[in-house]
Image 1: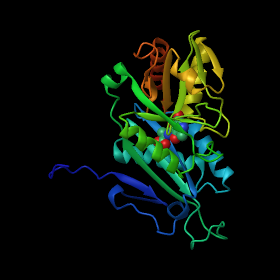
Image 2: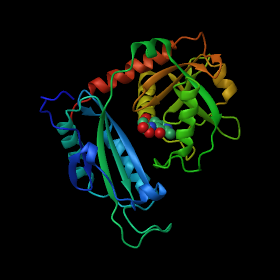
Image 3: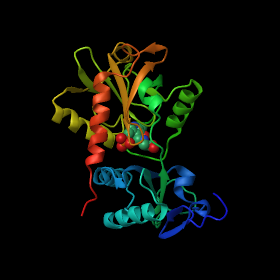
Image 4: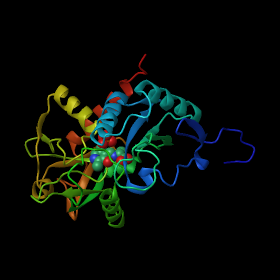
Length: 294
Ligand code: PDD
């Protein structure tokens, strides 16, 4: 930052306080730090609006419920903090990140008798996707899904995802698609996986405990239905993906991102698919149509 500039430093919200992001810290015995005993949400912000805030908060509450962690404050208060952080940080495009852990307690695996859930909220700006990436599409690699059986919980325990994303980065790829024991693709390390078949049917894995049910995924399913495209929610194999006409990923940061290479094989003609690009446009149009509630 240039010296004479008086803009406020980026703020974070940590357990009830707004604090400069660079100084924000949690206790060393926070169970998130000790055990990855916590959950998170990433809510995209587009045109200054929180995209699908309610479904994100629904999923956050569900993740917490599954782990028997209390909400640290009311949903209404979380919404207020999101907006206040966005205001303080001048955020119009990026994310609000929220993380809740079981709290601070002496290290012991079982739940502490008394601990209050700890809440951290931050924001992050995001640049628009590079036109090159959209025009060319991205590469994904594939690897074995070594995660646990509750991938529906948005847990901060992300080691397999991190290892997968690192392997992708080392291979010059954008994502790693994970493959279950039956040879079917579950999802990416931080995005849902989709293909389009020769008969123009959009296919994505059904949501159960083997994948995270992406909020972008759900919004896109709705758009696909409204626009009358053929859709199947089912498992699909690596073989089917390799020979698919089109492929893409969805997430809060990717929106709808065309995939044009799976491992060493081009997808379809090696260019972003027509239907994929239509869906990307529909999703962006959807985000542009959103207005601040109330
Ligand atoms: N990742 N699958 C996994 C494993 C994810 O981590 C994510 C999101 C998704 C897509 O979910 P959504 O559409 O709600 O973003 C699917 C976020 C962005 C992250 O970890 O940063």
